[in-house]
Image (cartoon, rainbow, N blue to C red):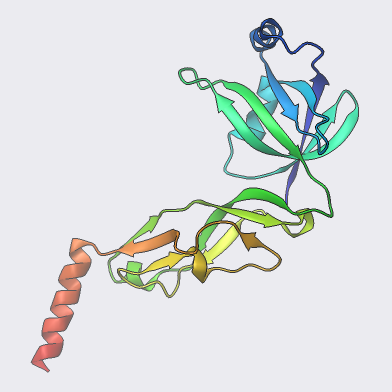
Length: 197
């Protein structure tokens, strides 16, 4: 999995006034949650978060807070309801020997039989919540739709990836090929032709 580096400075004051001052200075308050309750409160310059937040990609984050390195994943992010500015981010630590839970983007591969027959592909789940050791985490999860026919779906239960647990219900639909009016007409014409024979 790709990594991205982020530099932060420790927050010495956690009051509402201090948080407001940070945001006025175009900084975002963040927390790195420790395993034994030893949380690290820090701030990051807002523009430095652009490549981490506004992207379809998922990253392991190399956090450097006042010179101290940490490996983490971004877990929770709060946006302002009107301006959509980033208000706060929670990070969780990553250890090489422990599985982590993360959402990984789905990438569709192949040309569906149903789409070739005039159907319309619908993506219903764009990210899968998975658990795996950091070394086994891919950047994306590929779903092959080549054999997907008209009116059919691919659900979580149809998918499996090495060294990875998908933490979602097996019945969750990932993608489907919807019958369109044109496809219905084509199917009806083919059926009528078959009856003539």
